[in-house]
Amino acid sequence: MKEIRIGIIGTGNLAAHHAKNYNAIPGVALAACCDLNRERAEEFAKTHNVEKVYDTFEELVKDPSLDAVSVVTWNNAHCAATIAALEAGLHVLCEKPMAMNAEEGKRMQAAAEKSGKLLMIGFVRRFGINADIAKSYVESGALGNIYYAKTRCIRRCGNPLGWFADKARSGGGPLIDLGVHMIDLARYLMGKPCAVSAYGVTNNSIGPQENIKFHSRYTSKDPLKDSTVEDFASALVRFDNGAALQVEVSFNAHIEKDELSLELLGDKGGMTIEPELQLHTVQNDILSNVTPVYSVPKDAFSSFFAKEIQHFVACVRGEETVCRNPAEDGVELMKILDAIYKSAETGSEVKID
Ligand SMILES: NC(=O)c1ccc[n+]([C@@H]2O[C@H](COP(=O)([O-])OP(=O)(O)OC[C@H]3O[C@@H](n4cnc5c(N)ncnc54)[C@H](O)[C@@H]3O)[C@@H](O)[C@H]2O)c1
Image 1 (tube, rainbow, N blue to C red):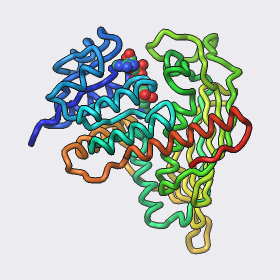
Image 2: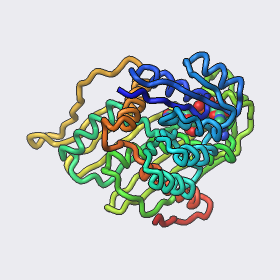
Image 3: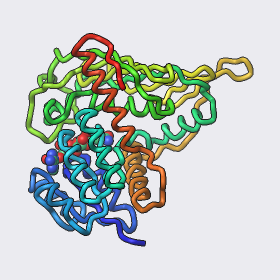
């Protein structure tokens, strides 16, 4: 079997998940990496057994030995790095969010189509075992027609600061960082309807909450301590099949505790995917709740990344012919996020083409 040679663009926290999972696949080599921070890239190369360190992604993509890259930079570099890699004839796995906005996403999709190479988006939650089980119920018709979904990803005090809180590098706050996962998962399970409009609101009056004591949270390695992104966003999205999705996300909100939830409502059954998988239905004219029994991998979230990277490599090798997370799904998500942000700004419902 031909060796698959991977380059990693951006060697921060999440790149480690990519590297670990590439290294676990026989016949895959980490050939190159780069980062704006050369020292970080050198350290990463040592830790993850990467053969060569480049200064820039422009140099890295010219490495003739490469087959594919992972783009794991701040969001504002996803578009340029992805297009450079595709134009150099490389397959790309680009982290979520696909880009800063739909316009960038469309250019990335066009570059993939022109090059004939794969552009896969890192919607890692699609690889969760709960997503697989929920999808199997949906596809068997257990929910009937899904007309509504509701999701919350709420942090009480969880702005990671650094580049995540810098709109110029992230494109936004919890909506583009956390909401992107939950909106995508809901839409994926609903059968990928296209959005036709969104009505959204945001709030950014709480701020970084750096003063909070006795509370631990994930913070970016990046030194910036200010925040120019929203603390909270809420939206109602309408789809072309008549279904709707309600979403609420926050980095900061005065609520009892952090919450992650996703529910689907169909005319034959409903389903809770987060926080716990359950089917709500009618059996023998009895209202019933069905709890699927399944083994959860030890480190569940890490296992999602393992499956995502395995799928990407299988697509690159041609062993899988249908990519689970194609570029067009990334563009669809960026259109929804753009519309929510625009609606929050204008105070009106925003149509989506
Ligand atoms: N799938 C998930 O659940 C998940 C989780 C966390 C982060 N992410 C995504 O992964 C990406 C990286 O996040 P992170 O947490 O690793 O951030 P990070 O700050 O730890 O790492 C990002 C790295 O990219 C580097 N970088 C920025 N611009 C670059 C450029 N032009 N060229 C080369 N390197 C560049 C930075 O120097 C930094 O080292 C983001 O897009 C984020 O949204 C996804």
